[in-house]
Amino acid sequence: MSSSKEAKRAKLILDLQKYRIPTSILEYVAEKVRSPIKLSGQLLKVYESLNDKALDILHRAFVKCEVDRPGRFLELRLANYMMKQIKEIDKVDFRKKLIGASKAIHEIDIVGYDEKGAVLAIGESKARIGASTKDHVTKWLKEVEDIAKNEDYENLEYVYFMSLGGYTDDAIKMAKDLINKEGKYRIKLGLLSWHDVYLSFLEEREGKICKVLPK
Image (cartoon, rainbow, N blue to C red; front, side, top):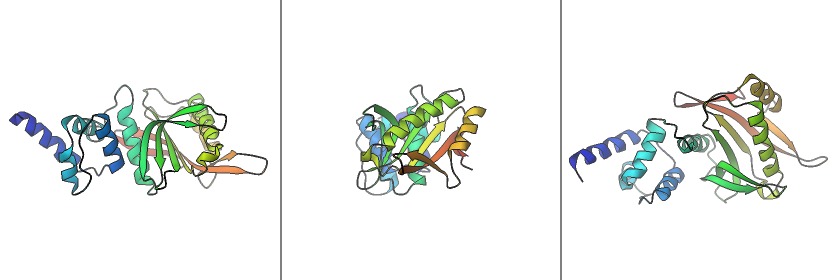
């Protein structure tokens, strides 16, 4: 390896050491680019075990806070946020297909699992320039409701919607009406049964994820 490549690699590792990225996310990136990864030992050793491609992706996603066209970097940052907000999440997966009660298949950007493998949280990441509208939110919540009504996902407790471009006024108004005082969204299952989930609307501002609702 040339000295310039070694210097670049050392710089990436130095920058990444400031970020304690969850192991599940590191494993996902490593798998996608066929990188080796050492999961035990100091964080420095973990980063040193990754190949150049994995380091580049992590650096662009978490240090530079770039937004790539497919929205993958934003998904990584949302997954990181979810895992740090909810300590019960043991593992995350991306672009995962979940089957709703209607038998419809929904591709979910981020799925968080507890230590027993049950779905605990799901997240939608909108890496579009324009603001997310009422229609965008409504479409997402219909998918959430269908998933929550499937008994296989009875442990679903947290739902996140993140928009890079913010929200339109009508989307904010609707969201406020949906969330109760406890920060939950009530999904009706039957005549006297409900599935309550914590519903959060997020926005990324200058590389920082901020909660829009509930306040």
